[in-house]
Amino acid sequence: MSRKGFSPAFALVLTVLAGTVAYVGLAGLDQGLRAARGEGAPGVFTATALTCVQHPGHESCGCDGTFTAADGGPAREVTLHGAGRDTCVVGTEIAAVDAGADTRVYGPDGSREWIFSAFLLAGASLAVLWSAFQGVLALLDRARHRSDSSPARESAHG
Image (cartoon, rainbow, N blue to C red; front, side, top):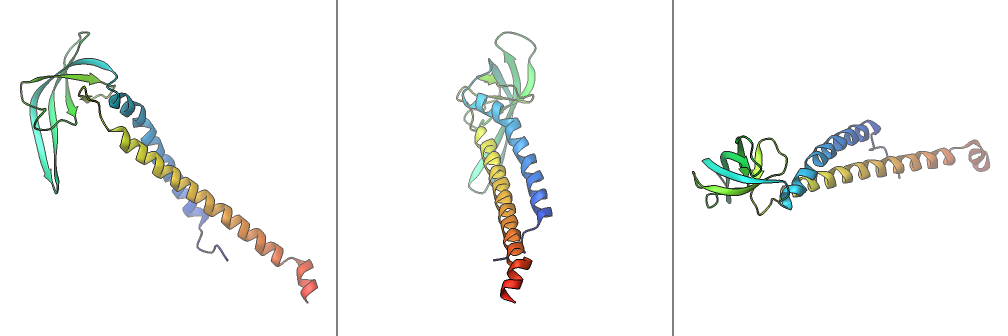
């Protein structure tokens, strides 16, 4: 069986793309795991605005406001990640955790944001493994064709 459909150039592009996706996944994984566990600087989020968008089957909301760390410091403008209409009431103070993101904080229940990073890493890993597997098959196929067309074989059959 010939591996004529395999392109080393495609494998290289796929590997570079997978590496980039893996980098993005790794960059957000640590922060996502801290947010999932509710780790970080505790403080208070005060809601100033709620913006919701309807999608087929669900609603996605953003809750903007200010976060003030429990240990003091200036309040900063952020978004409360994962807030909905029931948790984002303008003027309400909500316990929140700063897990290290510049523009968002998380509620005390944590976040499932890490799942997206895990999917990115899994997809990138599968792409690299598939590319490597295709490359090994192509090398084995070339080696088999070389041994089939070697001079010793041709003289034995001819």
